[in-house]
Length: 306
Image 1 (cartoon, rainbow, N blue to C red):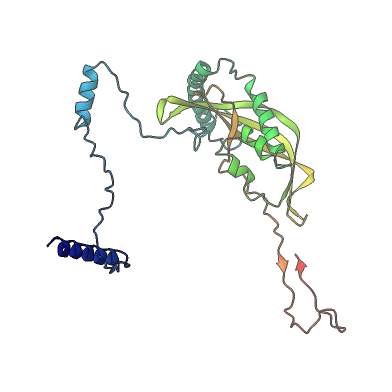
Image 2 (image 1 turned 45 degrees about the vertical axis):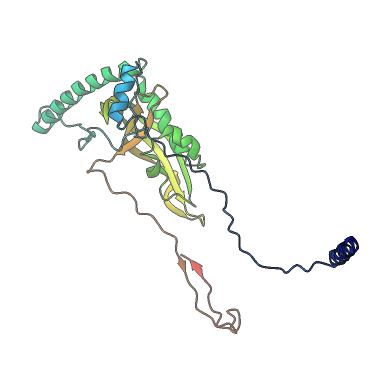
């Protein structure tokens, strides 16, 4: 019985070895495996320690901390005013009426009231400018006036900004583009004198401005040429007598401020100005592309300047 059992085991082993040497056929199957992506980290919501600003200020006050208030307004700098304080009205005839007449007595009374107000303004100006003197100011104003007008001859706007205020600058350079200005100061017919002094505040009581009105009677020459070099206004060789009331202003609160020309007062009784001669172009005839204005005896005129 032992022999048949051993033979059977050897046959089984031989059969298993043969199957083990055969290539294994693997069937490919498709399987969907869900893969979980990495979860993004979300920080927890921040919860303020104090619910209201009032509670925060109370806790800070208890801790001994002083929190200054926040100002959302932007600071502004007012370098000059937008007009004239109590504008001086020059009397007709330059106040040369007799004091015995009714009109002359009225002018004298108004002059006394104006001088009293000017004295109070002078005291206010001297609180900020200790070197301010009425006797020396007319000569200083005259130098500023002459230098500011000479800047128009060479279009030196940078220097002009330091001599006139932002209110006066547009009035001086208006409509002077592409034009040539020839201005000259010949002489003073009368010494310049202070007609009025005013001092006032703007926005608040600490923002103080001073204005001085100066009477100037001088002889000047003025000529303005257009971009074609043709005379528009005045004459260079003909001087004219000019009586002007010029207002000078200074920002007294600003320690680096200076006196600058602010405006000119034109009385209602002043004579009208000389009209400006404008230069215009007269267009020539409209020609067809095949026509020539230089052909034939009847030559067509070209554009002309009038």
